[in-house]
Length: 131
Length: 271
Image (cartoon, rainbow over all chains, first blue to last red; front, side):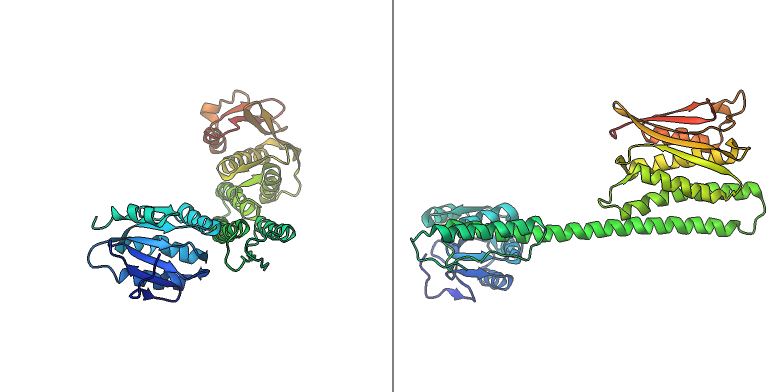
């Protein structure tokens, strides 16, 4: 996942809108995400809203941990208002556990899936662009 | 934290890390959620994945446990308040009657206060119980009978109680309230009418009988008058016994042998 120069930089995330109309967000390597970082990320994602909901691609392949409050925030606050689906990229055993835990316990209110391949994730998300 | 060069497997290090994970899981089992497992710098291997999962599980369990404890505290508080409110009602009745010399009126007040106390005792024992849902029938009946006997304040009356029930047997509030009220009526009737000689025995037993329980409560006093007909002659207390037996989905039977006894048979499982 190549971070473009125009990406919005917050404490732990880079966030940008790609050429397909999919919002992408990528945490720094070994990020330990707390509620404040989650809120910053949501604010950055929401800046791309222009009257129409969009899908979101989250690259969590290098995330080290997400606190309970941050997980709750990601599953309930704001995401539903401006996004219509999200895909989470996982790779390492840890990122898979975090992803599965998030999907299983926090049960996001939007269509959401885990992927270990970026192309497949983008392909799946494309159906939600302008949907 | 154990650091390890990528690709190098150190069995003893991994065994130690696995042991740390187990220690944290054991702390969770003790409802101690203050522990977390440290992940290696980049969190790349299976043990890091398990550690991350255990850490997240601990966070979720901690919140659930706190919420459960809050509910438990709330339930205790409710039982405490209900008991206090019932005692206030009982005290109000007592205050209303304190200037009266009318024995019949005072008797009615005492009966009402005893009925209220039998229910208040269930709430008092529930908030002191470990699981907040069940109380021991044996302990309850002993305390209840003592309290009723005290309310009659008859120093020259020598009445003994005999109990036969499994001390391990316990009931929830829905069953204990009618059981308590039934026993209250039987004891009150016995203390009022059964022993003109001022001495006797009141016996209370509860036995398992296949799919049912049989509660027997009665006295060895003078018994009911000849030709006594339950459907026509029963006082309010006796009528209550039959109504409360129905509340237990059971049936009540009046047995007139060596005094007056009631046998209440009700199913073990609630409908």
